[in-house]
Image 1 (cartoon, one colour):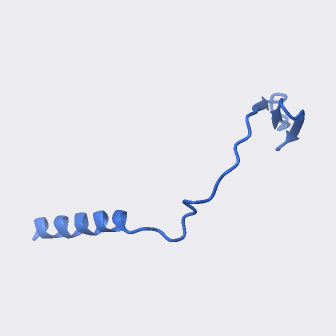
Image 2 (spheres, one colour; image 1 turned 180 degrees about the horizontal axis):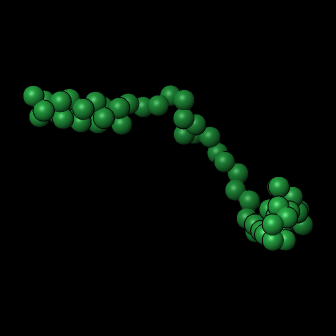
Image 3 (cartoon, one colour; image 1 turned 90 degrees about the horizontal axis):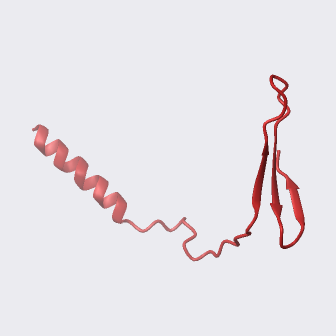
Length: 65
């Protein structure tokens, strides 16, 4: 009985992996920007850290947090 449950569970898991997911955007092109993340940990115990993203080609500096 235990072997049958293992086989059924394995079959369901493999079948689920083979089903094509219509929701996933496989054909969508995602733009990639080459840049640098700048992480500042801030002062000890103050909670003033920051995260920025800098793109050197376009001189764009984004403050993310």
